Amino acid sequence: MTKKQKSRLIEAIIHELISHGFIEDAYGNFVNSDKSIRYKFGKRCLRKEQASRNYEGKIIWKRTSSGYYSALFFDESGKLRGLTR
Image (tube, rainbow, N blue to C red; front, top):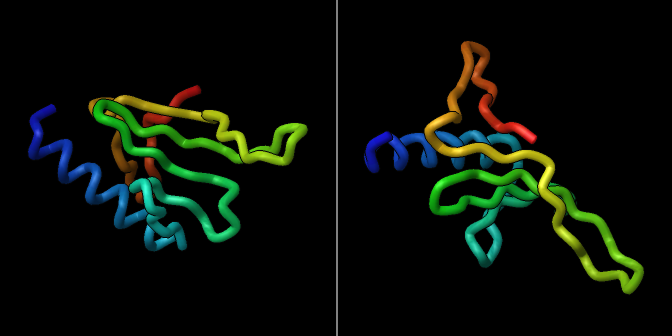
């Protein structure tokens, strides 16, 4: 995957996340309105994480799925595919 293809894919993913109500936080991650799910863009992969609270009440982010950019794609219905556990 070239840098240009990777940039286009990331732009398409961001556009899709914004259309589903996700907003960008201060760190460049995209979180939903109640901040229970976030998508974290790394250098080589995309991570989907879910928030939970520990016994002290602090938010802990746990990875639910991830995928290398080279494995991610949009199917015919427009859903993001390629994220695995």
